[in-house]
Length: 308
Image 1 (cartoon, one colour):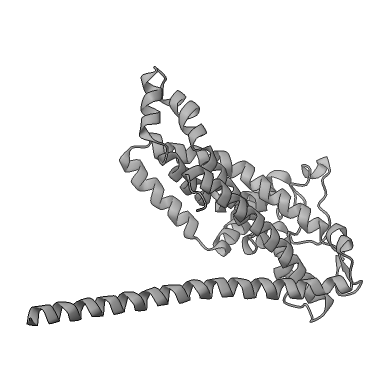
Image 2 (cartoon, rainbow, N blue to C red):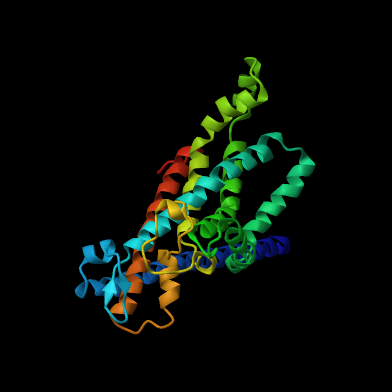
């Protein structure tokens, strides 16, 4: 009887602890959702106020940003620069990241994996300001010496961003490649193909959705980066010069949407100027939501996750 009572008491305490922890986890999830909703409402509410002063088309398609003296709030140069820098960085890092993930998942010996994988993880944990310092101390002077220009440029931002998004592409692509069924590889090899032919003809097509997801997530990561880009891009408000003299804009100084926010927020006074910065943040928010939603759809396709 005593053993039964002790066991019953122990089970009651366990059930109580389980219930308590379940409520803690539920509250944490609710807090995360509420925080997201509040941030979204705050940014969009303040951002929409600018359209009482400026037309939406003038804001999106305007080429001039002079909020203090001329009250001009055009962000088209920042939008173009943001896409230019982002897709330039992805164009460099995607082939390198996919090649590295193939090496880690299919070719590298165990010792090489133990060396490379922690290095990739460490690369992901480096603060963005450190990347900016590296770009300012090494990449910018290198461009200056080679091209004979100031060095602060879109090219410097592209190089820094391509390094920053490599860990995202490598880690997710490697997981996607490792998720390919072993039977598929063995069947391909049984047909007489080489290891490379198996990787190229079977493994990569089977893991394509996961690899594309990695690239899409890296686009969102690059599009939202601010500090490192601000340190190396020059941060000018004008439209980039896409003439051949600047290698079609690569050597031009520019400003992205993110650097526009952190560049002006220090002296922006309450009113249209501050509201325009919130509207810029809302544009960024919309783009990140789109890229994240697209990546979730690809993840479901890649790993067979379906809505119930």
